[in-house]
Image (tube, rainbow, N blue to C red; front, side):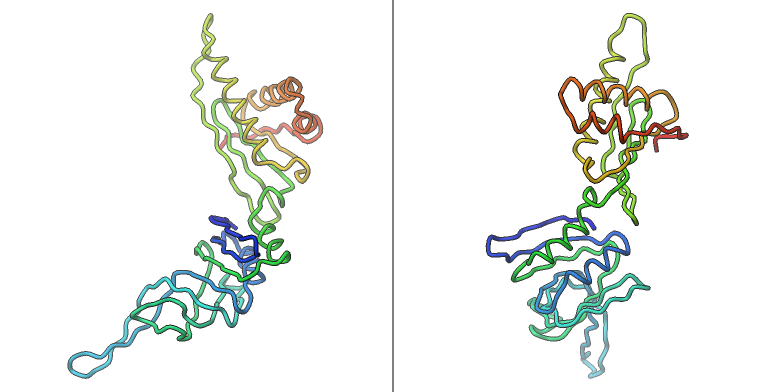
Length: 249
């Protein structure tokens, strides 16, 4: 689940803005929202209006509403949650406190506000949004000047970083190639440090079509030794696995 905003006050109240990206996120969201919470999301409301001739017509209006939740209905087959409650948004199309149901599915942005975020709710939020904490496998697809870093959980492969550096052709007497290559390797090194939880990840696959993958592993090991970076050094020895693949994409 993508976390776009997290504002929790000292008294425990606060709000988050999240986007469910896959089916497990819908389940997490279902467990996260409780009666009395407020959610804000885009929704559709059927509005009736009377014409000058006295006839009544209806049309659908796209609105962004906040409701105080009374019931939550989970539809696992459709990957949808239906939140029902009373409207808390001033609108010409729906009265305050009027009942409304908001449907939230995959890739729908939702703001969730709670009077108190207890430890259980915060744990659910962290489990749903912190990919690094839940990933047991990292994959770096690497070729000359290009690397893509992915973290894999039980149900999700998420791209965490992309590194792109222009590598000039190797020429005799020119240091440009070596400088660019070292710059590239350093950025990949930093990306791994930033996104991989070495305590949680069991294996880091370095895969690519040529010699670059093995050169990077050698670079990372030497760089970790220079910097006394014990976590990275241990990873290069015990968790890095070099594999051949046809492309870095």
